[in-house]
Image 1 (cartoon, rainbow, N blue to C red):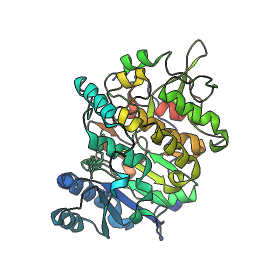
Image 2 (spheres, rainbow, N blue to C red; image 1 turned 30 degrees about the vertical axis):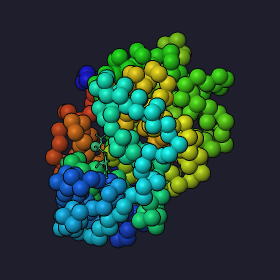
Image 3 (cartoon, protein in one colour; image 1 turned 135 degrees about the horizontal axis):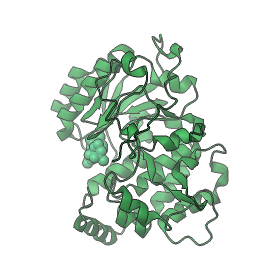
Image 4 (cartoon, rainbow, N blue to C red; image 1 turned 60 degrees about the vertical axis):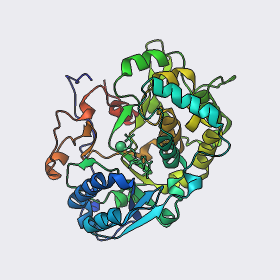
Length: 380
Ligand code: GDP
Ligand code: MN
């Protein structure tokens, strides 16, 4: 991706109020990780870093979830690296498996088609299960019901700065619902083609009336139009719409990268999101992958393709919360795969970060941070 040459520091350097540093109390929060037994090395690595950078000081409990029972080896190794408690839960089959009412023939055809196009995880059922689980079920797991806030962690990620404040108390004290570190248009490599293909097909979902929906994304918009009372009046959906010279607004494919999330479970447990998820799920798109042909054919991205991710997690944060309840955690240096966010401003020194600001995704045209930014400040 192109580097911004005249990149200016975003206005996040004011950071976290001092009262959330050196806190005496804990929030009602949990660190969660969904993992396979085979993810044990990556899980150990992520947790070890999170402990060193944050949790050894703050003392939050962990819940690990898996669709099959964790091995003794997995549990032993996690218990060896956490400074607090770890619980190991099984995802109930009805929260995981492809539902009975999905037409398997149709679903398998969709998988074959994506496989032929070399879409990542295109042929995988378990990946789809995982995506659906994280969209609609994780927050209802029995081991998580007692908690209000969560931090989602994945195996094999990097935390590159000391986190010396309590992000959960910050969320609670500042009335935040959803926190992210990285936001991108959904496909990492083919953004140009992707834009071209999307143009004209997927436009202005959330601000216009859809009279005759013809595709799944439009039906998602239809949901919004049918349930205006469920949508937050001061929502941040504008982050997803780019205005073109003609004045026409287009969906820009931005989404928050959900492998990192610090969130308030209530956002998902509340009626608006539950209804939204059930609406989407009832369309079968998690398995049929047909949220409209242009996106489906074009986006070879995540969660086969990440349209569902967009229509499930991201708009929920932007639709059902106020825009000021969606928070960018500049201070949290974070890396997943090739992509990393490295803090700007004094947060870098204060966090004793070990990352490169120069290669931080925020500084590239790949990042959607400028759209988030624009929700709050207008910059030239
Ligand atoms: P990516 O980030 O989109 O490449 O997907 P990942 O492979 O990292 O999967 C996302 C998260 O779900 C990670 O925490 C994985 O450990 C977990 N995950 C993915 N597939 C499965 C699965 O079949 N079973 C279990 N238990 N966890 C899974
Ligand atoms: Mn991952």
